[in-house]
View (tube, one colour):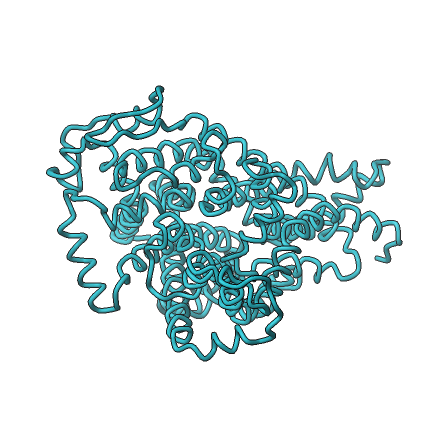
Length: 285
Length: 292
């Protein structure tokens, strides 16, 4: 690449980085403002940053006074903990169901394996719109209202088809010799899978896990419908019931607070995510 | 290689948890939705009677349905094209070596990693400030301009569509970057010898090679198109009044309590999505038989 080409490339890379980060920057700037600066300041930067909106999330006590409004206390720490539980359980359940199914479809190839995979994938065609009404009936029938278990099961079912597809593509592409050499040495099929293929698919597992995380993170609706008890809500459900017109900046601060752990997770695993997707797509990775 | 029945039984055993999970979550709700679409189930009348295709007939006879369908299709096409264009552009830029690459990659990854369900909330209130803020004037002018061109409620709708593109474009970029990495570099080297311009290379080499990944990205974009709208609709108590199939079905179901019609409306997109699925299967499946 010529010097000019390199500069142009660097410039374009900066542009896409700015484009990607600007909305996050924008909401962060607003969340650092005092109510006065929110009205009279500049939208693009903050002259007098304050963490007021953030500390308000963690304040204890029953009610907060803000201006003329008395607002209920927000159990934000509990929401964060609930979200973490739901997220971790969803990833575990998704992978626990996806990995055996993917091995079966990718390696054992039962009759009609291709159709099984397609049928799983076809569940994405079902419009989610009003599906939460019957879902809530089921949740009530099992007495799972206000329980994170219902969300975990539903989120996992939503992420599962993609993860099965990804993992089974990877297992199907692994050279047969890898498995067979282990079988020759006396390992059982599942033993060979557990000791050799599963560790090899680490990056694909990361990719599946992050995809599940994205699916869980995207939901607001189900969480807000299924979790009504303030102390059992996730961040999404909780922020939804805040009176946003009064607490706009606090809600935005809450979004950022909730995002921090997710962003750290993603930064740690982002490389593995791309490698995993690539590995699943490559033949004989 | 011929495999015995034991392998098949093992395979079904291993698939069981996944199938049980999907069936447990989906079977009853889907059956409910389909059945309800054939009934007059509503909070306005007692009981629920089978009315055959009446809900569908009423829907197809409603000019609002066709308007909403047109808006929905345009919304699908515009957001998906934008996501693909942005995603492909960012993926191509990130595929070339550069010292900035690792950092920029993280930046591009971030919109998707930021928890979408709550971020859209922040985004929505930022673009539609409920109180006076420092940029109310700009936001108000934009809202007025868009609403007066496209109809009332358009700006609220467009602002969520922008979010969908921002987040979806990030997913598409990372996904296509993985796809680009999966293509052997020799193919690009040959292409560089055979073609004259970078544009030709993109059209005749890169895009065809990426076709299965593009197809999957399009499909996921279609199926995820309503998620953000649904979130904002729920959050704002139905402030998105622009007619789109997804939110209108909500309005019918939650506000009006006409579950039969709401079910028919939300199922009306199934043929469209199924068509997308068929195209996807043609292009993406089976990856194993794709020539390398």
